[in-house]
Length: 239
Image (cartoon, rainbow, N blue to C red):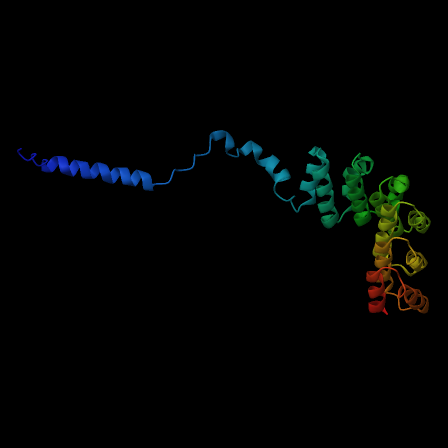
């Protein structure tokens, strides 16, 4: 039989080009889809993202405007916490006072802290109704603020919290005691050293370390026999 005729040079070159293109297509990874128009942040969404995603503006006037419009309790509480850190003028309290009656306890507690930060004796009337609040953090924040403003019954209400059967109430009361740091409240701290809950006793041991007094030393010596190891170790460290 006669041999097959050789492929024409033009046909051979075309075949090589096709094989090269096929290899390039396999090697090239698929490209991610381009974002659609709806997924791009538009200018009208800018205000929403400023409140929800970005941290609040450092200006208290901007925060005040956001407080008026915000409805989400979590973001409200965050705004009030930022306001506590930055507010310097009691004029802001006319916006904050409504949040003292908010359904969310975190919002109420943070609103009280704003009052503590920039308020004074003239604002006691707004805080006293919250002394009977069912939330431990709200009540302890109110007591701290009233003590700062010189309310004569702050210690009485703090003692009531320390005598509560609810551990969370007593824990918040001890937190307030540690924050207030008053020699007039030392007798309450010494009382807390006998609490039935070990974490409360531990916090009290750390708190009384600031008072170099004979009665404190004697109370700490009793904690050397505490049933909880962490309390015993802290008492040894303080002594």
